[in-house]
Image 1 (cartoon, rainbow, N blue to C red):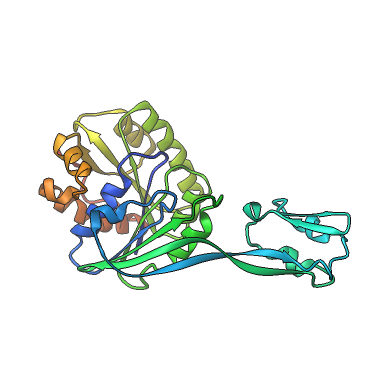
Image 2: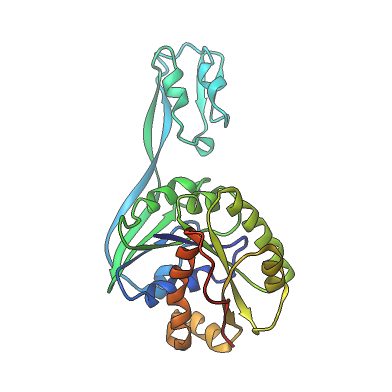
Length: 290
């Protein structure tokens, strides 16, 4: 089972819940930090690093001696990553999506693909947690290629937790679309509700079962709980607003250490999501921790 921990905005607590969930699981678990523009799960997991790997994407390279300036490559490119000016083709690597169309359509074979480094993977382990974190190189414009390389390390058997990038654009979709279920993390504020609605609309378009976790709540009815009730969305977890959590986060400590009472609620999340995948109604109501 592959679970995406995602949200429509940053700062809601995705990494906090991802790390806490990984540490709460009784068996082997894989944690993938796919927030490649600002990965920080390693601060809390503190894995023993085993190795690091480069990630690369294929970009076009033009042989000027073979290029006739026909312009076919520019016409087929949907992202204007390659254009023909007279008898010379210019390549803009930052716009390239590595689809390979320009190389395949070139009638003279002037366009080939070459690997260009775009990031790094950090691979390690902490006890029964297999940890992989992707990091986009400074200056690179697109994070989805690095996210896809990170996702290749998802466990074939067992549980994989994917700490997703914030927002609802291409990085979010790339990280979420291959998962079996998602937990959307939000906060009980107007901004939180607004961005949760965007995340819900996207996840429904992808047809992925999901539930919601609310962070920093007082356990009372709020904007998020009312919205979830109206939309028929399972509210799987509410985490209280507690100074202990903020202090632990600032020290790089995990949620489980300061709030052990969360353990049962965290362990129940994969089971509840599995019920949603199978179309079975949840046997219990939302977990509220005060």
